[in-house]
Image 1 (spheres, rainbow, N blue to C red):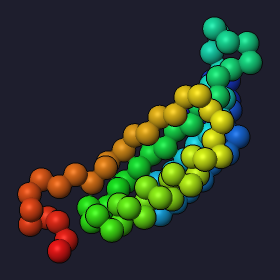
Image 2 (image 1 turned 90 degrees about the horizontal axis):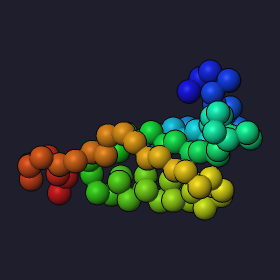
Image 3 (image 1 turned 30 degrees about the vertical axis):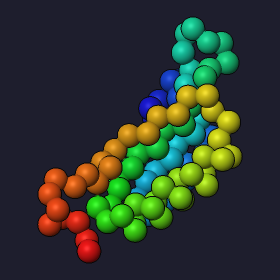
Image 4 (image 1 turned 135 degrees about the vertical axis):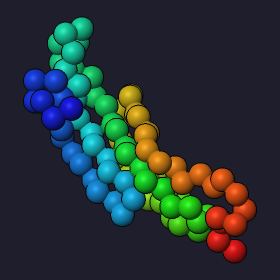
Length: 86
């Protein structure tokens, strides 16, 4: 991803629990490349913090023109009730 011959980054945004990278993936099949957005998420376990995180990401995505969006990461799943905040 960091090879300029393969990917050209046009914007990056660092949040408290995510990193968004927007740019152009240069493939032999496409002369001008393909616009892509990759968001790496490290989500919290509490519902309140999750809501804030997804609102922040949603606000950023309004301004994204890329047809390809990839959301990856740790989404903070809860395995048992005692892990959840009251």
